[in-house]
Amino acid sequence: MNTNTNYNVDVLICGGGVAGASAGIAAARNGMRTLLIEKRESLGGLCTNGYITGIAGHVDGICEEWVNRLANQGKAVIRPHLPAIEPESGKVELEHMLLQAGCRVLYGVHVADCVVNSGHIDSVIAYGAGGKIEIKAKIIIDTTGDAIVANAAGVPCEIGNAEFMGLNESTSMGFRLSYVNYKKYKEAWEEYKQEIKNKPAEQRLNYLVYKQNEAIANGDLPFIVAPGALVYPVVGSDNEECMDVTLDATHSHYCRNDSVEDLSRQIVDQHRKVLLLVDFMKKYMPGFENCALTHFAEMNGTRESRRIVGEYIYTAKDICNAEKFPDGIAIFPEVLDAHHPTSSKGDAKRHIHLPEPVPNGVCRPSPDDADLYMHPFVPMGGCEARPNPRNFAEVPYRALVASGVDNLLSAGRCLSADWDAIGAVRIIATSMTTGQAAGNAAALCVREGVLPAQLDGRKVREMQKSQGVPLDEPLKGYWARVRDMEGEIVISKDMAMIMDKDGNTSFMA
Image (cartoon, rainbow, N blue to C red):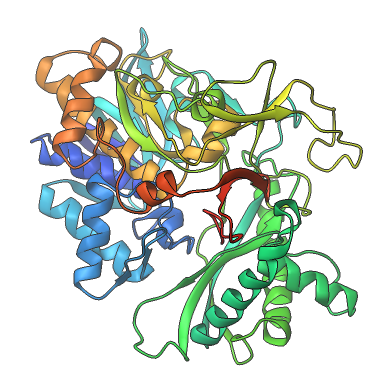
């Protein structure tokens, strides 16, 4: 097929999820001739099109600006943790922010290949409704989520990990429900949280799992369909007794997310499970008696697939040890969150195994794993390590810099990290901040006439700070309250959390 469209820009962003949108905004605001291409018809990726409408992570920089702009329109619920956006407005506001910054956006464009010479990407080959498109750029940012550009360019990539034999994290399907009595649901949830205060931390089940066990015992559900989920309110109604909510709940296991056959299997599996879950919720979940399924998510909830091997491979050990870096560009204060590849007994693996404890983590000897749930293929020795909820880690700029080619950066869920670390930093707020850093780095590279590996990451850090990412500052708000909470560290739902003398914890979702 002949090329019928050509572009030549300073910065090309491939992928319009939250990381790509943030990268495009940052690069264009720095005066770069910037182009963003996206295969879908809207922006925001899993946050908007996948109904992951709660913004997990440290909300700062461009992410905070986006959420606040939506809140000012009455299209976001501002909460101390996990502010939630209205997804349709979220798509449009990202569009506005990109166009206002001067970034050109092309929808319906699929990356197909790269032209690489001597370790340099000369151009990206893509396809749209009009045919073949060739795009030349000085710096390219891969925010496809699947490292599609990096893989096509010959950048070394990894997928899965050794322990789980290359399997990916379990995937899930977001969906939207109408006619939910959210007030009644919140009251029942609060009552349940009070009930479990007297139980040991390890026996505190997610409320949705607790109710599913009840349905299974009554023969109304064949198995745990949703090993864990958060219910996000959708702004648009002043009546909490009849409103829309979004969930990302149903899980598919044994996933291979670089296989179209398996991705199709997952989607079909999740469609059926969503219907099962909705029927269950009508009968068992307070407030959902009259709910109606109004929309499946427009994309499968893929948490990770390919990720680049970059100048630095960010590790879960870095997260557990609350590592700070001279070129740190994003704040990560959350838990590890690799959704379990094989089992619905719990929703995520929130620990790693190390030969020795790390000084800033929450560590304990590895317990017996006789039920083969958490580690189904091989018993793990050493010690279990988890992040300390009173501390936080940083993501270094070097983890955005691809190896193998000299003008490619990556952000979001395909940056350079090990499997457990990418399961953590893939969340919405962190993805937006790494995207912002990639856009800033690309602009600095063009301005200084250097390549990403030659750029001093400390300059990116300083630029992030000037744009509302509070590096070098004590965390404030919700994270400060967690840090200063009195109580002891306990392990519950496989995560480290703080429990006070009254049984309240720092994480009660």
